[in-house]
Image (cartoon, rainbow, N blue to C red; front, side, top):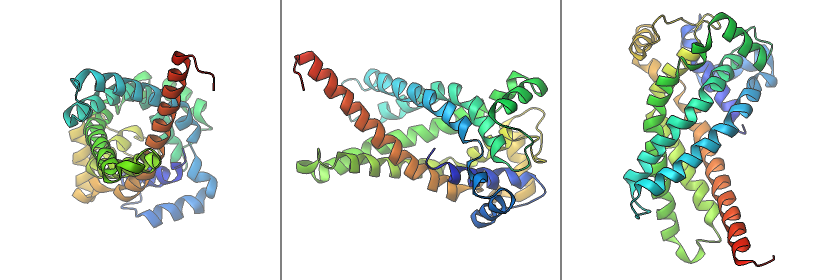
Length: 277
């Protein structure tokens, strides 16, 4: 949620390519949002993100920890186990987040004619049916599977490397290692999966702001349309704000998660030992 304005700029860049406006740069997209709606336009749809992100991340990290324990075979430094566990986590969490992500992206676009989150949910359900909420699920999983595989494997490797550089101060600077490793992992994974993210945005925003509708909703059809209108560079639209979003977002996410996990582990250990603190 802290990085939401950057995500709004990215959505405009990726969706507007099918609208009357052709290729849009970061500055152009930001200027367009501020001119039409002011600073508040950068936060349109943040309620949908708030409603979806909490439950989705609960599922995400729970499945990851359980899968990592199962696949690691007693080796906590197994990169394959980290990658496979990340894929399992994203398949489960995307089932929770995808409907609200679709609502969020439609609300982010200017002139979307939706009064808010619940108005968007009701109108999509009435006009397009339940399937519209999961129109991009297959693309999302196909995008997030390599995203999380790269993300988790890079995060665990970077965290281990940073800890080994200065083991004597590892406990004092743990949050720095988690934040730095998360930022590196988020940026790399975001860059690699940008083309599929463009396809996902097109599927979720179809019919809004004059964007194309896709009858079959296949990834191949969407890619063909994007390449036909904007060339192969169209598949990389929004790569910069996507990286700028995921690097700090992953840093915030991982450092918060690791700190919370350590806190609750210490609390459980204290309760088990019967020590009053």
